[in-house]
Length: 417
View 1 (cartoon, rainbow, N blue to C red):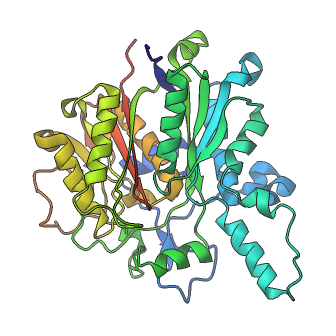
View 2: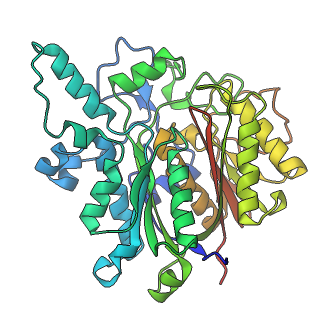
View 3: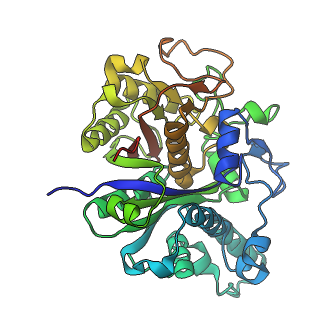
């Protein structure tokens, strides 16, 4: 069968370095770090005292006090970024067939803050189960797309993908596949995460995953640097409107890019560690290229997973070298997590937005906080260290890898009629 073409017609972002897409992009190309000491709870006894928090976000101002109290922050973030994307796409749902518009959302954990608050309150009591009636519907990971569909009256496919830090890449791939198979006309897709709380920071500290560079938080996220010591936790949301091309053209939509492929694989190796030879990561990039009908020679930029962990970064470089061969020396690679921190289940969405904007603007956002070359990496590879670079960009690839060995990679290219 002949697949339908799928295009990007709207973007929305709430990130640690910008609360709108223009703010986010401006910070990216100017190398702004979103890391700072945590303000949302007392970190005096924590190993890591900093993170990339969302800043100046007024949930009550956006939703109203009563509604905001019913929603976990990860849902608040989802609704906020989606409102920007809907406006950006110029959508008037009263004029569209909402039975053919769906929502597929990614979140690695869901309502962790809600779960933490309710369990702590119970533990402080006398054992009487006095739980908030909104406890479960605030917490469950699938509730964000539910609220989005309710807000806009969308009756198409609606669910959440959960694959740790690959979650929102998986949501993009699922939406892409439904659209090219003709099962829907449009999807609101992306991801959100809100884990900067005592349980999130404490839990990742316990497994030695986070940077502990408390003397210099702004430079703590150092992908591919010799002295990297762990990732920096981030939070926020990214929303992408994916639309079947004919539907987009009929309503006169602006088109950012065309989504042309997605790949998925598993490491089948370890609960949290990536395969040391990058086998799953290489496989997923090759699968995405095959799905897109492209070769390594077509790709200009790879937005890497690049978390700034001692064991994670080397396996991804090995994987890229295996997947791209000699082409690896002609492409740009960068990790925008050096600026945003790691948004877990939302990472794929916000990094896909960065990739799409790199494609549209011909600018590669940098990998900031590079101080010392790691001799393990081939110096001929262009990691786009510290400064954004201009170049012609026609095809971009964005990777996401998650605990459990989940890998997902998406590809966008410049739209041509």
